[in-house]
Image (tube, rainbow, N blue to C red; front, side, top):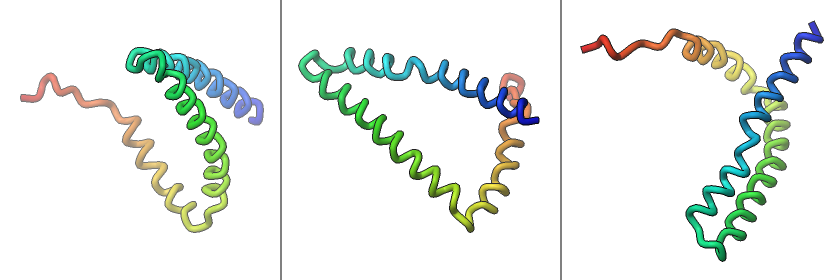
Length: 97
């Protein structure tokens, strides 16, 4: 059972890395399209700094959420309706008139 969890965590991390791998080059490219060369360095530096700060505070927030006492019941009860919403078959709007 532990091997299954390890395998699924590793595969999730690989797919997350594939999806996230183009974010920073893509944002840098878009910044280069919108701003002149003299302003690009400041905008890219702000973006990279914001990503670093978000990563630092993300761990603190995750630790705080993990240690909340009263909200655990709310998270457990809200999890199942969301799973039902996102796993239902989509409704086709082509036939409705």
